Image (cartoon, rainbow, N blue to C red; front, side, top):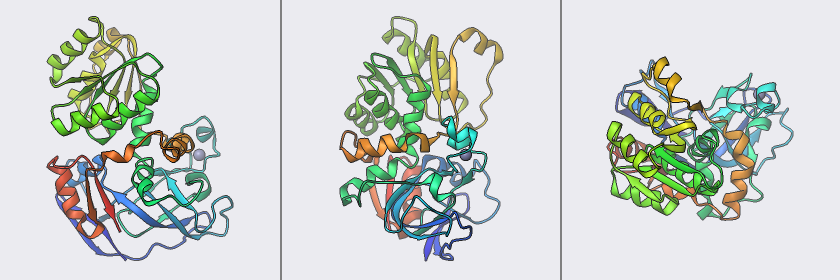
Length: 338
Ligand SMILES: [Zn+2]
């Protein structure tokens, strides 16, 4: 088969790779229905995170089970499945309390920008849909693998409740789906921070009630103006830079919560500022597996349509164009069809 391989900064190639095979009896091999490029793929693509050796790319996936290891019990061949970017056994103590992305046996899933993918710990990792989905549901189901699950975790970690006032830092796909998640959880007011018209529009479609275009101290001042001078109850940090993290903390009211899901790059927190901010901080790699059953149900019943974040769709063979479009922010998120 042919799949995406990153060689170094801005060098993604679509090239011949070995077909994935069952290696351990707990593995599954999936035929990918659709793949996509993640905002976090842009860190190594831009060279901010070094690439030591040619690396198969892609960690968001859904598709049909093609092959199973002998020890897999709950997943059947032919089922349509979705899993998280972290494979997890879903049985260890960390999994049992809902932190499958900290599973004691977790393994990173990689190489999903390809027609076939091996997923380890298939029983614990994969969640089957009630039936084989119609074509039009596939993009939304794909988002559950990471970007929607991560936006949902940001809102969950930020303690969004019915009636909450929420601010979202970051207008990438995760931030936008954080808006959708906050809306679904009953937030009354959702302030999206964005400067881009098409992203502002999607944020509003997903339930944003206000848009703030300012950043940094000005952005914080604007959030405070909109929240009786104190800041939002819940702030979703969906970028991962020093500026975005400080913007999130400073936009939260005393006693409020920050849910941070942007992969941090050179973020350092000032202990004294943190001390006097009085905010709760919770975040990390989203335990997507915890939310999958509920999110599959919401998509299946057409209560949410997170697939709307895909504003460009390309054949898998044009994966390099997909990276370029996202790097240049011409696309919010690119769907790749095999
Ligand atoms: Zn586990």
